[in-house]
Amino acid sequence: MKDVVIRSSGRYLPEKVFTNDHFARFLDTSDEWIQERTGIRERRFAAPEERNSDMGTKAAQQCLERAGVDASEVDLIICATVTGDRIFPATANFIQENLGNRTAWAFDVNAACGGFIYALSLAYGMLASGVNRRALVIGSEKMTSILDFTDRSTCVLFGDGAGAVLLEAVEPADNPEGYGLRNFVLGADGSLAYKLWQPDGGSVNPPNPDSLARHGHYIHMSGREVYVNAVRTMNAIVEDVIAQAGLTPEQIDWFVPHQANKRIIDSVRERLKMPEERFVVNIDRYGNTTSGTIPIGIDELYTENKLATGQHVVLMTFGAGFTWGAVYLKWGDPLAAG
Ligand code: UT7
Image (cartoon, rainbow, N blue to C red; front, side, top):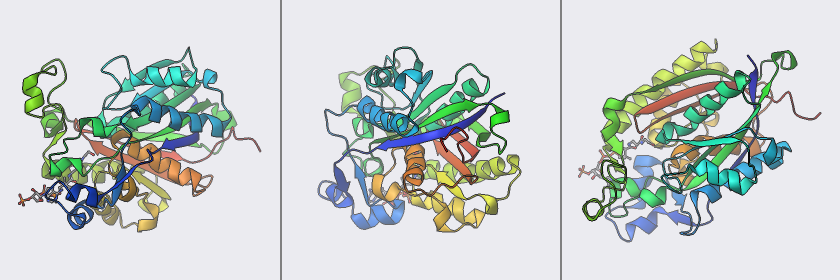
């Protein structure tokens, strides 16, 4: 088995900012309600002509530039998304084209907010087994394409954006400190699939006038039920992955949680008795970017030089499916020059 390290990260957020007051102009909502119930102050929405693959490409390009790796040297490209450019082919294929890579195998992972952790775990498997050497793992979403702007209980929650990481396999002998991705907790419960979903638009109900009239091709969510399950599951998986790593919560330097609701993040943090400073939060500025939240969070730590070699990092998520996952990694890059 090889070790697998994160070489670099990247992110892209669309330029246009929409504050909560924007929604109060056409919906029965308020900045106060949104901030208090979710922690969101503003979010970014992509321009109509801006594709999901454009955002994913920009995040991936940043990764490659920062690692000094040419796109042609990547063997595997996975894009986690539920708002791909097309039903098929995969958005990862369009990103591959944009990057100028013509050989990597490339596909999308549809696991909603669990998507990035699922994709990261799959890429880990391919690299650790020695099948591939380098992988780009991207989480990219154009949530505005499936938001119902007449439904105040969902449309205020989400935003558009993308994040990416470049993974590389290293020989354990060249990585004596054991840097990289180390422990994984993954799961799903399909019996709760209908609690957060896009009912129409697939083969059960292809787009048709009826589905358009009932807004079936937009997000539908039983918010409370998702909330309760999210808190319970995130608590369990974060404790599980830390125990698997043989560590205690106090030893974790950074937690990068999925950003669905600041209150969910706070209740996980409070249960672990952790200070706010150890939790990455970007929901206030970007809303819930679904599979984008975690790689965007990693990139914030990375570009703000907050990640020190040897630090312990936990990523965790919960989302539609229901899907969930947590990953423990030891930050460090034995391949970095100098
Ligand atoms: O990323 C994937 C996973 N997603 C999640 O984890 C989301 C989980 N759920 C949540 O974050 C929360 O449940 C929400 C933020 C969606 C809702 O917060 P809540 O505290 O659970 O509110 P609620 O659904 O219980 O609704 C309370 C009230 C309702 O009014 P009534 O029935 O009490 O009169 C809603 O209609 O708040 C109302 N409401 C709103 N009011 C003003 C719902 N959305 C809004 C809104 N503005 N935007």
